[in-house]
Image 1 (tube, rainbow, N blue to C red):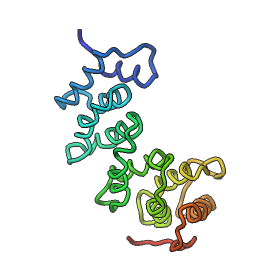
Image 2 (image 1 turned 180 degrees about the vertical axis):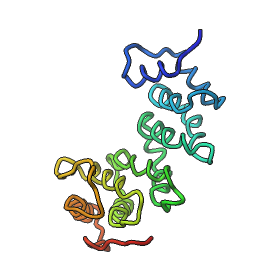
Image 3 (image 1 turned 90 degrees about the horizontal axis):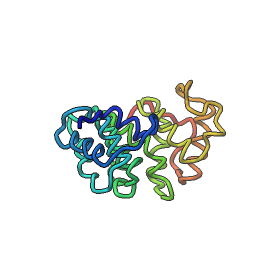
Image 4 (image 1 turned 90 degrees about the vertical axis):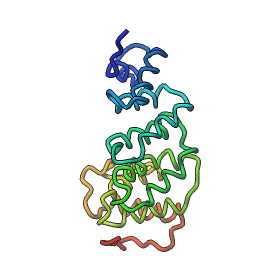
Amino acid sequence: MKHDIRSIGDRAKGVAAGAVSPEEIEFARNILRTRSGDIYTALHVVGLLGNKEDAKLVEGFIWGGENNIYAEAALKALCRYMGLIVQYRPLLRKLVMSSPDEGGTRRMTAIHLMKEYFEAYDDRDLGCYLVKVLCDVSDPHRLSARNALADILRLRGSLKDPHGLEFGEWDEDAVLLVNVGKDTFKCGDISVGQISRTH
């Protein structure tokens, strides 16, 4: 029987009716094993419906230039869909604290996963680092840090622009996030308005 990975993916995500069979999940795994076919959709299927034993298979799509287009889906599959955040916290931390040029899309994805990272977990140093990213107008991942802090600090409902759609260099929402972030993470060395233009 020929399987359609797009159809499997739609059903796995719940945007189409119907269950996904074990054979279809195995079909998605095989796409990842052979690195042929729609890898991006297969990562979502295995992430959503696979098991913890699939982690190593998915992990194979994080590093290397050939995986640049798959790293985001792989990290989200492991940390968000498969619920393996505890196992991958050290990796996310390393990626977030890497330089923007070195980390690239992987760093941005790791910042997007900070809501999961900080769930029932305390890491003041990393929290302060996110505040510093928000304060650095030269950092290309400022908007990602802004959104991560809005979720971590549970302030999204208090922001004038909840999703940062009109986020520029500095605004009242950013000041609020910095102030609450400083207080929450005990960041004594960061002052509001101290905006670095260089790394």
